[in-house]
Amino acid sequence: MQAAKYNSFNLTPTWEEIKCKSSTDWLKSSPCEIGKTNKVFVKYKSNGNVAGFGAYLIQIITGVVDKNMHRQFINVLKKTMKGQPIIIHNEDVDWFHLKGQ
Image (cartoon, rainbow, N blue to C red; front, side, top):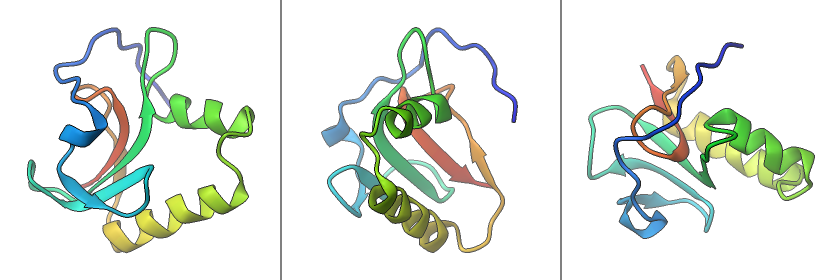
């Protein structure tokens, strides 16, 4: 796994401004009002110290995301991406999100 240091984001919408289907109170997935690829958004924001997948890992390490929540995340990811290759592209929006290729 590789990560690039990233200090600023083009877009910093609120959670409510991300117009996608809500799967749970902390997950949103395609269909979305923007973009053409399948997406899954997770309600964990990047900051100056950690971004993208690292923000999600911190939630696992601190116990905020438990086993059941992680299963929810995986199920939404599988259902949304349907076997597509997945990339984590946290250079535009400061919320942890994944896109299909």
